[in-house]
Amino acid sequence: MNFFDWSQLALVCLLGAMSPGPSLAVVIRNSISYNRISGIFCAIGHGLGMSLYASFVIIGLGIILQSYLNLFFIIQIIGSIFLASLGLLFIIKSNAKIETKETNNNIVNANSFIQGFLIAIFNPKILIWFTAIYSHFIRVEADFFEKTILVSTASIIDALWYSLVAILVSGYNFKNFIDKNNSKIQKLMGLLLIIIAISLLYKLIIV
Image 1 (cartoon, one colour):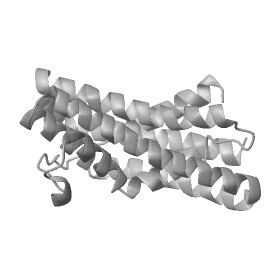
Image 2 (image 1 turned 60 degrees about the vertical axis):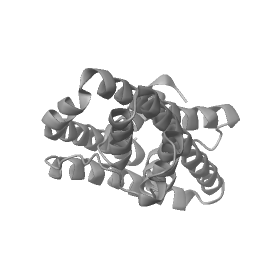
Image 3 (image 1 turned 90 degrees about the vertical axis):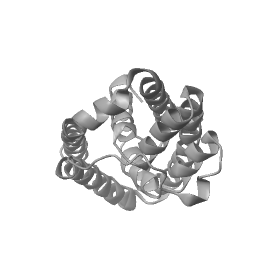
């Protein structure tokens, strides 16, 4: 994998992590309700959960790529469409507010690390997300090291982003900034996702 491809992967992973949702709500809640360390532990747990999903997808796509090229091509097409649709959804729902209350009663009494881990594991959209992303970046000749980079890029970016959120929320009132600029942030992320999806689809079909 060259640096340009990796940078595209990293950008898509960052946009996914930045998208408002239950994961962001849990990190913000723990950071505000408890303390900064609690939010960071939640972020690390979430990153670990993401790495398990990423590993599962990489193994599955690797098998498909080696044995079913036509199916893999279809997955790539669907993945591009999914990314573009998700970007469009971000734009359409850009005025939606972030709820910071706990949304899963099964993890109310768990510690922050477990909360972060479970909020990732119990979100099936992450599996679809990774399938859409990695279908464009995994290669049939990819070795263990390259696959490790694919997995670690997503999990590390996810954990670092939510750790940054925990630090900002607990010390710099970042939640108010997100609430105030939520619509603009989601529209920008949606536009970037659509552009990336079109570029991946172009490279897949034309190049």
